[in-house]
Image 1 (tube, rainbow, N blue to C red):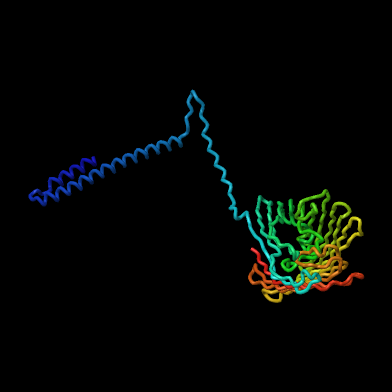
Image 2: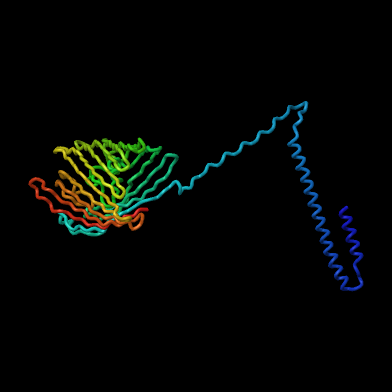
Length: 414
């Protein structure tokens, strides 16, 4: 019907067009072409409208079929309604690797000068060295499980060896952490002086006494368990290890280590430690130490006594005993004064093997440290410091000359 009306209208318009001039005929032809195009477009629109109507009718019939109940027939039972497909399980979230993995480290070294030394070959030596560098990789393996791989590099520090800074593995362990408790499996920190070193807090200046005087190792391979109780007032750290430090096992003996700490107040802390190492032959060693520390608003103080019994094969046993006291005063926002005094009571045989600090063997001595730590930035410190060693009489043996070391230490972490 619509087509008929359109056709009739077009016919009337065409008949009404004037034809008395050539210009008018040209205009009429243009109008006819436009009307023809319009008619073709209307045809297409009607066809599309009819197709849409047919599609709409099919959809309505389909909806009606789905909504109407199924009528059972006499020959076949009613089919059970189809079960809804279970919703797919959500895909497990993948944690970005950078949130499970962390890289950190630090390094420190010195411009040093030996102003005086009992050993003429060491006296007047000077130069630059890197005393320690760490590169640490930490990863979260699973819930409550982490892993650490740490590399260390340092200079020989014996004033003789010319070698490169070769890295070695310092840590390689898996840790299970639950609340205040942690289990370590592998090459991990030992309880020998981990807590004391953390309280001392100035490893770039010098090691703690047990570490410095070669009475124990900071690492061992084995099983360690540490934690805290009573809201942190009691803490402990125990380990069963090879006794070989960060080196490979070479004997059947093992080393047992345990430390127990107490924090009666927020300012006061104390720890006792003991270990026993089963070494080859008649060379077993046992160590005891006690430490007390106090922390004030802008200062802290520590006092330690340690003794080690060393069995010596075919010779009298050797005892190494040392007492140490230190104080740290935060005198400015970015500067701290550090003072420490160590007293060795009897001397010992391998004192001359201490890296970066040549001390006479078999001679009782005192070590005094004076330092100023100036923080240039949050993670960068410049530390001028001096170490002064004096020797005491040892029977009829000649007392060695005093030692004096000067250092300008640069420390940074990342």
